[in-house]
Image (cartoon, rainbow, N blue to C red; front, side, top):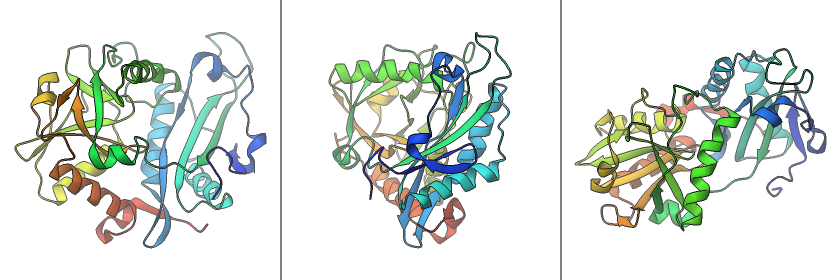
Length: 309
């Protein structure tokens, strides 16, 4: 298996090419202004062989994100899905991370440039647990950030827009500088929104609660998967707003995301959450999620796109 960022091939504008050729021009509009969109997708080497987890849902969200920016993709959803599978196979990767990126090329300059070429790239690389094996098994330490989650008044929180992630980068860097693993962002009204790259859940009294889609959160595909799996297990799920104190009073807190999968939070702002370790509901949902992603749940086989590598 090649090491991270050393895979030989990438997908660019409709074909697999040597990775060294899959470059972004210096004067590309996306580089200067952040006007582009991306996705994060995982492939798992599961029971039935390698498969991409919820590929079509990710590509559909990529198209929605582009539409928010008035970007018309030059490839159909089926072509992008096929590109994701093709580049994994070409790199011989039975598992890994997939990053489709839609960027605006060089051409006219300035903020008003509207007709520059739209390009699509897909990169892949091996990636383990985003927040570490220790974090997944025992929980991470998080900080409630002084950086506020961007508002829908001025930004597009439902889109995975390149430039908008400066909001998350600032919060993440501040948390890391203070010795924490992750940051939790509140919205402008003081309610819990999400972490820097993950959705957030609390468990209290056996009920699973997560901020609703009406808040400035990304509509996470892992979030949606965990909610569906929780209901399969008979766990009550509520989408409702809650403030910082609900985090501190929770029996369990965990994060969900393509990179993070299901990661428990054992401490927030120096205060222990629950018993200070991964809780039983979190552990149960972690296992159920990985069963689904690895092809061990026949009833969720529709979430998987198999391929040969």
